[in-house]
Image (cartoon, rainbow, N blue to C red):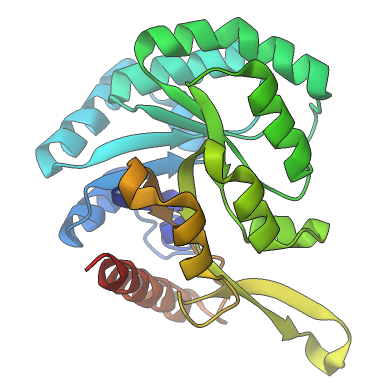
Length: 266
């Protein structure tokens, strides 16, 4: 198991809200500075418009820094998945995280199965795995059934227990039902806080160990270290009032979460 960072760990730092948005190269350099050897480029729109020369430069930078790459996108359209397979091969990535639905494309179980069966032989030939993420738009039982129907070792689940709370699924139950199929883990803690005026709640991120995520239960069920499953740090950090403060807190959370995970592995 390798601990990694994601573009979601730099969400505010590369956003347009930052005075000097961090580039992909900057994120890779910071990942290496933390002594981390894995970076997941996830839901990062500029990636798809990069030229072949630019992509080769990204890979050369990652190779020079000793950072392995993974990719993340959304949707199961065959041509889209083929495009990300091309990107994965150019970047040397062995995993592509995706989601069953997008905003404007929501295949049912049968259609999702058909699409995956169409492209998975190409992924298998390239040695690349598709990991479908647990999230609130698709019941976890449906995701598990899809993976089990297809029955291909190059298809699995990207486990994110925080996402499912919005669909009133319990994170512990989702961990247990997906454990056998997990190929990637998104690591972020989370908590509920009262909205202003005490009307309702917000589900937001928290530093690891300070929120509701039961990491010990996840580790017992999934056994990422024994099974060689990478764990990738993300954040759900709310805006802190200004860019300087928000980016500073984001960096603090990254340092804290890395230390937390490393202590668990010691």
